[in-house]
Length: 129
Image 1 (cartoon, rainbow, N blue to C red):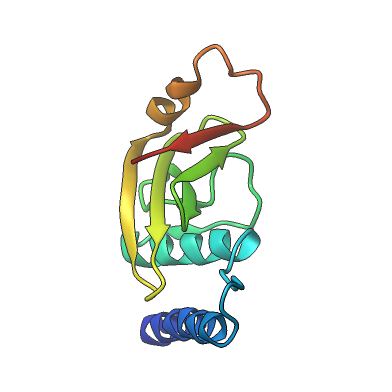
Image 2 (cartoon, rainbow, N blue to C red; image 1 turned 90 degrees about the horizontal axis):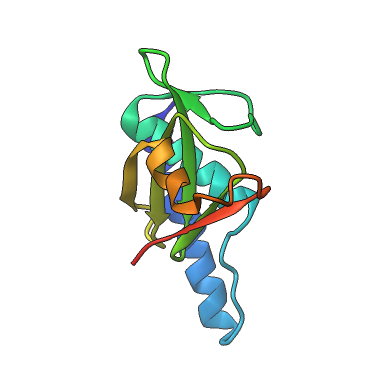
């Protein structure tokens, strides 16, 4: 993968979003849903040298060199959702300049434990400050 080109394209995407929002005040063109998830997975895989797996695996998106399964969650706000307990989790917040902040990088069970007693729920949300 051409890492420099990847970063340039992400910056261009967010620059285009900013220009559209300036042209149409009050309208939001923020990438969301699958796009934010895919951008986050690629940013994290690139930054942490992870091997991305096929999309929509249950419980993980990438694998470390040692074989640990990693669930990657990305947001542009302050929460992410989980459908199952991951082995390891990396959560990031993506900024409009194409950079990101690591919010959490650790065992998935520590995030999942926040939902103790709710494990039968199909989805759980993780919020941070």
